[in-house]
Image 1 (cartoon, helix red, strand yellow):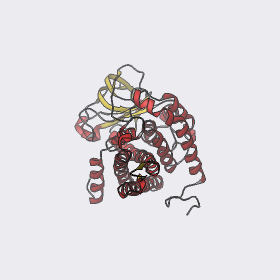
Image 2 (tube, helix red, strand yellow; image 1 turned 45 degrees about the horizontal axis):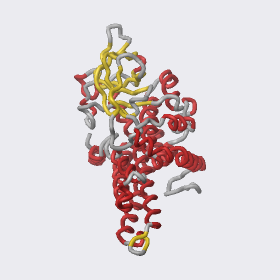
Image 3 (tube, one colour; image 1 turned 30 degrees about the horizontal axis):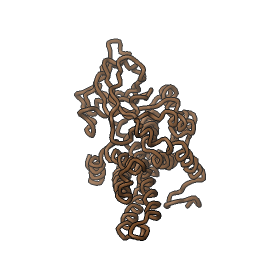
Image 4 (spheres, helix red, strand yellow; image 1 turned 135 degrees about the vertical axis):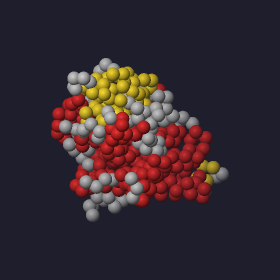
Length: 393
């Protein structure tokens, strides 16, 4: 085992250096502005650009395509530190890294990688991933957005409405999924690379969200958007496969995000229990508080290990070709519910101050909830896990 191993995971010196550098950046640059951006909903473009300069917007992408050329463990470690400072920043990083970069790198042509992956992975441009529609969230195969090949055979004309598009208001490069052959159901879905500044695409209102408020989210309205055939990602009809593969990768990122949120809540609670006095003693001496601390710590470490395990499974997949859907779903399910549990307990430990905006606890609580919903709800994760174990398709 590596002498730098932690939690039984073989980290390298490069992993540890990255974690320390990202932690320093996040605590110095992001923590001081997080409350302001949460309050205003203003997209944190300046710090997102700095994240790009540090290589955080394309950690797993090879250097020749604008990324940092590191592995999934590195990505998870960085995600935890960014999420610990502010979940909204980590959401932007997750969409770029786990969804857009992953899909372009795995399924894109060399020309597509040079034109679209390089600027997104380097942080020069912001990416978005658009699968959900008003009537089809968990049921992605129920989408209605259509893409019809024009008479010349040079462009697909896309029409429809996409919803809950993270980074939608600011993204320049988007991955869009639309039906090209409706009669084939999910096998008739195709993935497209869309440039946001072209006619036929209108960004809808920015959603007023409960949490991760600084990560801008909106609807996308397509009305005859002309997408060149060379911007089809993969092959026509491969869209559902691409979407699910990207979500497998994305769920590891969300698990890491949830671990970061839970860790921030736990550390704040631990410090408060050591300092706060009531009835003549530190509240950490009360057994009810000790029980909360013990449960938070145990669940946090279990979530961390599941997330590391999923990251390692993804890394092995590059060699074996074995899917890591099960590991990703287990990590995402447990980590997201741990984040919700830990932030709930943290607010309770802090009492009235936990409910006040003077401390970040209430923001952690609001931010944690989305981890149980996006990139597959907890209910969907349980279904995926059970069906995998039962051998059902």
